[in-house]
Image 1 (cartoon, rainbow, N blue to C red):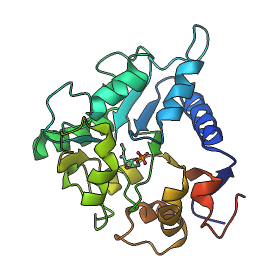
Image 2 (tube, rainbow, N blue to C red):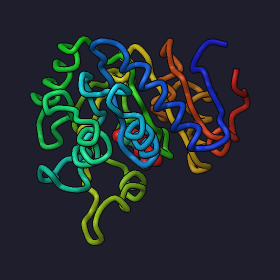
Image 3 (spheres, protein in one colour):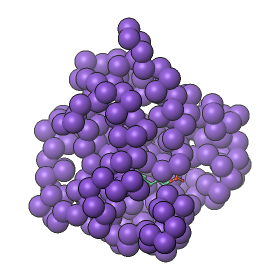
Image 4 (tube, rainbow, N blue to C red):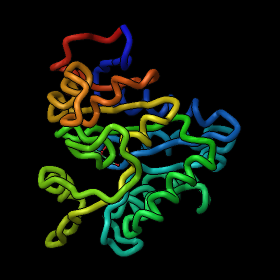
Length: 246
Ligand code: F6R
């Protein structure tokens, strides 16, 4: 069957281990360029990668990383920023030097967004892009309605997304209303994509993305048009899928 290859695994732990193995394999190349995601789903992936980092074992310090998105309006170093998340979960423990990891400038304008695209191109493009999926089918912060040829730009977050991410912010600190995200067009240029989905809350969005029509109403449905997408999900997230793992 053409379209995304779907692997339904027993547990979220299995999803994380499989994803970490795939990322580790990609990093065995001489100059790997990876696209990364934040959020709760990849936390276990980054934990699994941290466990693999060892002298003579997995190294990530020669790789170049581009994250999908960053909030607007947060001061540098804010603990809920995606830059802080990535430093904490992966870049610092893996000794990835500054200059090898990149996030969009959440406080930048169109020139900085274009600069992010240019930096990805200058690095040779993204080889492997890790993605999560929002309950509304978003990828990156491309909310429903985003054009499938969209590029890195400032976007407004939906109330649903802001509520979903509220637990990442200290009590009383509102979730920003805007962010800067790679576009769907940017994401689709990655040579290979790994989409992760765990938990029953993602079941509806995953089924719509993989088995529904390709539509701007479901941003992740654009992945149906990419030739090399692997979906790793647990049984809870995969329960609405008609097809089963190949
Ligand atoms: C994160 C991102 C988002 C998340 C999505 C799922 O960089 O771009 O698209 O992947 O919101 O988030 P979790 O994993 O927290 O359910």
